[in-house]
Image 1: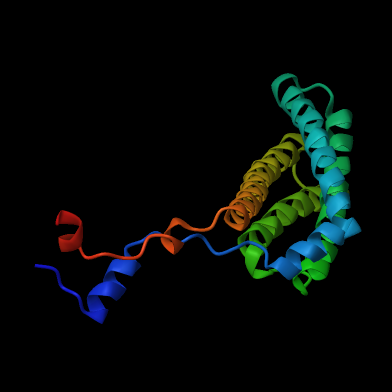
Image 2: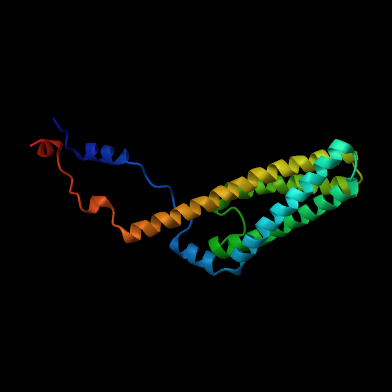
Length: 193
């Protein structure tokens, strides 16, 4: 026996997987694609990552051998300046695309975690300028900052992937209508007959 009530139909519809909320509205996507800040972010992100890799090697070399403190220190300062630059330009990008400088819904948790990344990089600079702690202690703070940077970078990479999947899904939907548009709902008894 088939139950055919509005409540049952609502329940049945609720069991269908719902697509994730779109990362960008159509208007935001247009602003994103038209903004020069999108290109700036697209250039700065890999540049910062390359600086990070070089700096990480130098920091680890210092921590293992005790040699190369000056080179490691310079690399951390350069990495921190790159981070500050990408954070400022990223805030401008968010303002252009989402209408607010930081904490837009689509990037809220990435921005929250970015502040932890910035706090640890800034802690390193304060320790360096104020000559607080030992050289090794400062390098360990830099490693903690780098660990948070990697987590934050993964957040942004996953968000970029989600945006690409959303665009592909929307493109596929525009080309091919949903199968439900062609298949009227039939009761199970009609299929068995």
